[in-house]
Image (cartoon, rainbow, N blue to C red; front, side, top):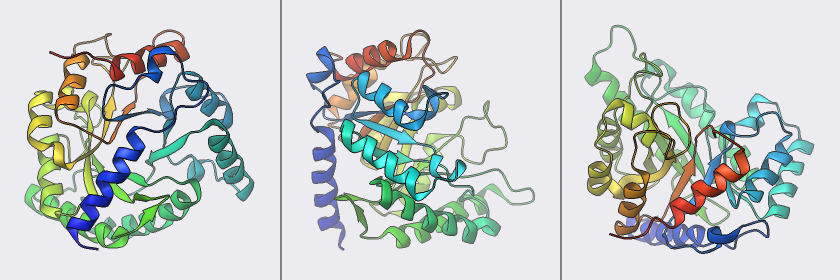
Length: 302
């Protein structure tokens, strides 16, 4: 598949994902979409003690029709019956699984490259079963004795190999994408990729439309800041965004990040992928998620 055709397909798929029909549980202002992106909830942050299907029900009650996974199907060793129940629940609620994480190995260690690719191959089987078209990848830790330049080059080469594995593949009409995420040095000082600027350099060197960056505002505010300027310069390689405030990883408005200005910038930049809530709610989770969704969909204009 050539890049022009793929880009056209990706744009059409992203637009379709950005304006899906809301489930019956959607509330009030959430039903009035003023932004070009779709919204999701990263499930690890909310309702952790509930059974999986009930967690989906709570997300739908809060007005969301997308959720993101953390590889629950692997960590909890899902059976065929578990997959069937998850699919039945998402279809009943009108929910789509837009992304998952859960790859065991990172991309920055040459010794782990084949294991990473094996992880990716195995994950795509579960992703196809669940209708989930995107997976999050991490760099992994600094390798003792390796230069930074060598590990950077390893990241590029490993993602090129990953791109070859997903080349032209789709899941439920959406291109399969690998999304590179950074982790801030306070959370993991051993992590190789801690700054979005370097992750963007890696993805640009890979130069494949099915390999993009996950822009996590929480991690990047801690690591480097300057959030909006990077959006303006590099929106073309951003395939997913994660939302939480600093400090504390709670909902927007509890900390120092001006999410109203970020959402306005995304509207101006016509960002058409997903913005996922990855915060630990302070207060009742359903109403907190609903208010966060209202604010993301209707930030106003300047």
